[in-house]
Structures are given as structure tokens and as C-alpha cells.
Length: 314
Image (cartoon, rainbow, N blue to C red; front, side, top):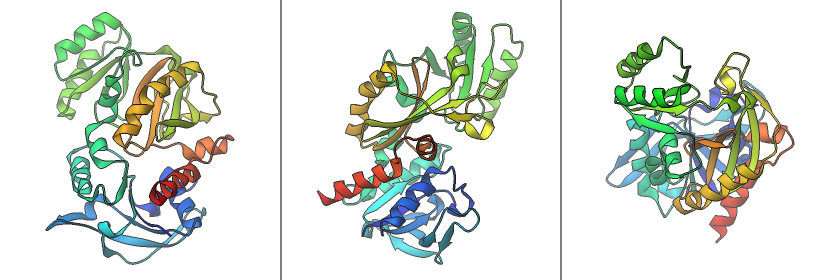
């Protein structure tokens, strides 16, 4: 039996038929492992000790509203658990980075997934730019004149916040769109960080492919098709999941980035591929495992715990 602590958003509020973290917890519980959950706000560092106010999972089932029974909160020394699973959702902000810095103190004695230093150093929309030839033309800047130059060069562009998630703040700006300067003003007022300007990829109308990698190897894929009239393919803004097969270009992308993921300890990752282009590498809390399984793909939660159990046996 393993002792597992999962750092996540409140498990009481998840969608049991869609949430990846719930699926991972359900699989681990079914294997007889001891699981506790906690939010990043309860994490603390004191005199070298890393503790959190956790709640033990007494029971868990795929019945919405009755899906989990938790113990009362209690302090737990995270050095005494076997695995810490980092699964809270972005935003990737200073609070997220600080939590990662605290969890670094557990490594290597405790297996922390994904490696907190690697998470901290691999923001999803920045990390992707390390792989030349895989991404569409992309600019990251707060200099609005540079963004204007980028638009003049590429015409049809996507603007989005560097540390946004779930499709938040994503705009398509066509060559004749008169809202461009107003959007730049909005970004400057709303976000302190740089923004991303990226050439629009028309193939997004056929879907945004989510490919899940485990220890650097592709283990499943799902296509997310935008709703009619929508640029974003995220599920919570109306995107539709559908079965998909990986093609040669997808495998080429996975082969190119897989070794870097493995080397950095980014064991569980989800990449986004539109057409022939890699657009994001998600390493904070990648999703999609239930959709992959629902369309006849691998049980990725089971594969994850197979990997963890094998790693700790060694």
C-alpha cells in the first residue's frame, strides 16, 4: 500500500465523469492505496518541514454528489508519504510557483509528480517554444508595437494571455478586425505579464488534438472540436470530444519532445496539436484521460499508477 497525497482543487466539486484527478484518485483507491487530498493554500514550510492540512479519502465512487467521503482535516508531514501528486488547476501565478518551490524540498526522498522544479521552469506556453520547427509563428511580449508588427506580417492572428488557461482571454483577430487596438489596451490593463501573439491555424476548425504522454511516451489522444462560431476548443466553452488516431506528424512531435519531458521529470503531460503544429505542452494539471478511455483508448489512470508502483519498487 502506498501513501499518496494529492494537491488539488476541492474534490467535492469535481465532475466525476470528466475530471482527470478524480479518475486518478478512484483508480489508486481501488488498488488499496491510502489517499489524502489538500489544497495548495494549506501547504506550509516550517523549520525545514513540509506539511499540509489534508483530508483522508475514506470512500470514493463515481456517483456525482456522493462521490467522496473525507475525514476531518489534519496536519500531515509530506515527507512521510510515498507520492505527492500535483494536480491543482492554473492560473500559473506566484502562488503556484511558491507551492512548487516548497514541494521541491521533498525531492528526491519523496516522489513528487510532476517534478515541482520542472513545473516551475516550464510554463506551458513558454516551454513549447524550445522546440524549433514544431510550433506556429509565435511572439511573446508586452511591447504592443511588436504585436502590431507581428499582425502586419501574419494577418490572421490569435492573442492570448501568457498564463491563461481553459481558453480564458483567447481572441482571434482577423486582418480587417477593427477591435485590434482596443484588445491590446485591454490586455495591457488586465494582465501584468506578457501576452502571446500567434499565427492563426485554420485547421483548428477540424479540432485541437490533445495527446497524453506518460514518461515521454504517447499513451492516448482525443480530438476537441470547437463549437460552431467558436475559435476555442476547450470543453467547458462548448468543445466536443471525438475519437482520433495519431498520425505521423503527431508521432514526430512526441518523439521530439518526449526525451525532454522524461529528462525533466515531467512524467504526466498533455500536449495540444492543431494541424501540423504543437501549440502547448501542459504539465501542471493535464486533462483528458476519461475522454480517451470513453472512446476506446487506454486506461491512462491505470497506466500512471502502474508506472508509479514500478518506479517505487525499484
